[in-house]
Image (cartoon, rainbow, N blue to C red; front, side, top):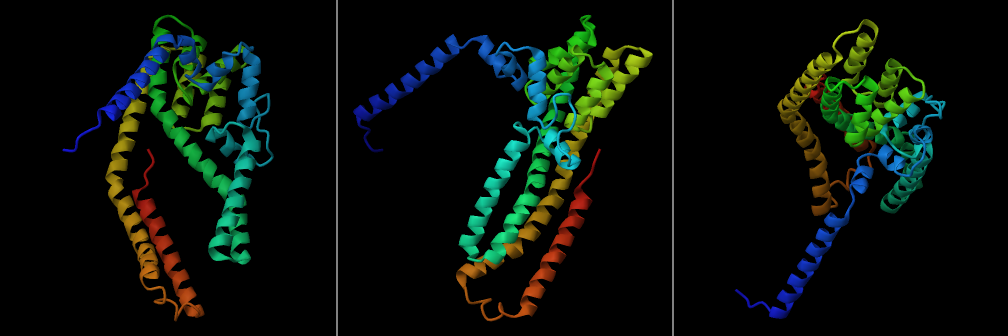
Length: 321
């Protein structure tokens, strides 16, 4: 074992001590309000001591809505995707990100292929298809995160109702205690109820903003209880158990379907990987036949056939509950 210079050891211990001292000072003097401020975005905005109505308007506009809660863009599908994806900044930020991605794609294709004929279509595809794909991915992640938080939020509402609080106060408890995305979403519900909306309308607006699969059960339970009466706490407690069972079943199905997904991934990646390996090892291997149209036609047919197989395997392992 090599000898360690005591000077370097002292430096390392001093650096570790300084880091631990800084962390201890931070934990000692950090206030509880700073923690509350980081719970979700709505609480962070409330920390600026503004009125709740202006914060409600700001949260709506950040999500691509008007100040009254209506869709702001004429393209409804894009506006709904933007709303449910949770992207803050609205259409302005989406346009900026899309333009940056288009410039990067144009430069990359132009440098790699040295062809304007290929760079222009790739840029147009990024400008037209790219925003929809990015927003769909963000929406899927946000809905999964919302679904994981949803049973805990229902449990908070149930405990609040059993303590004797009305439903709007129970919803406000979720907005105070839960992180994003569910914290700010239920905060918007509480603010809408405060400024004139009835409970059922606010809940339906919540489903419209999020689009998660379990939300209609919650909205329907609240609507039925509001019109016919009943023990809402008991109904929501049973609903929480049902949602948790559905969540477990989804995870179980995902585990069982992982073999098929991995097979599709490997079978799709193998020919592409072998092509690039051969290009690196023997660059002239395809050089003699690359100029013929039959070669390009054959590769196109093979790619289409592979895509059809991937879609078929995806349909076989993709289940909805």
